[in-house]
Length: 321
Image (cartoon, rainbow, N blue to C red; front, side):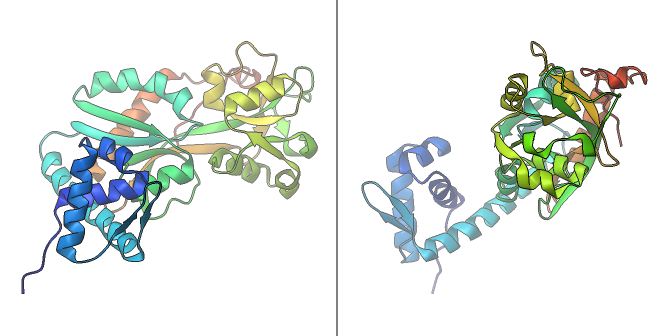
């Protein structure tokens, strides 16, 4: 008895429908009409002899079996993409499409400086960027929606490989006139009752708290900021103090404010920026090449500062590990 095998297209439509939860949006994501996607999924259900999706006017709900099959479809589609990637990688490296995730505490500060040089070095690379929180980016990576991620470590992202790019020191930002004396800020000088942090989902919050090694900061902090720019505005208005990564200061996040920022004095007062990818990816050699390129680009953008510069609120050295 012959067994029906789903087509790649049908599985792509099924995965897109689960991701978007709406036939119209799923069809748009697949660049087909809604009727084409709906008909393909009905054919899939008919040939398999099961119901995968419950359809109503307002809700698209996957059955338990539909969820299981969609999970397997994600893995199968990832392997199908890997076949194409293996063949393509045998030709020209860093050529064609690359889907990269970038977290919000890196994207607006690093990409404007990095992308022009990257385009000049690899003009055939079509880089598609997706800004996500650390957790969402890792999930998208393992679902096969992203090929690699620019992430700040340490962060638990599952079964991945990584290439470190550079270390990004952390600064403590104060309303004007409130910064303690000295070139750096001791952890003990931070008032836990005035601490402003990013919302959950942003790894910078965990990096900052880990660098301080003070549980009371986590317990008392008002986690109100949705972005670094929001936190800076809060600090500028005297609402509290916060942590700012060096790259954001170099990119001018404090310009136009009266915020004073000084380096955090800590053995772990930095985050490590890295490129990560699935350990099973056949494109590891490409990602290593991309990481090497990014290190070279960043080394050319930032010159080593003097010891005097280190105490200035807008001078923040990046060092390669």
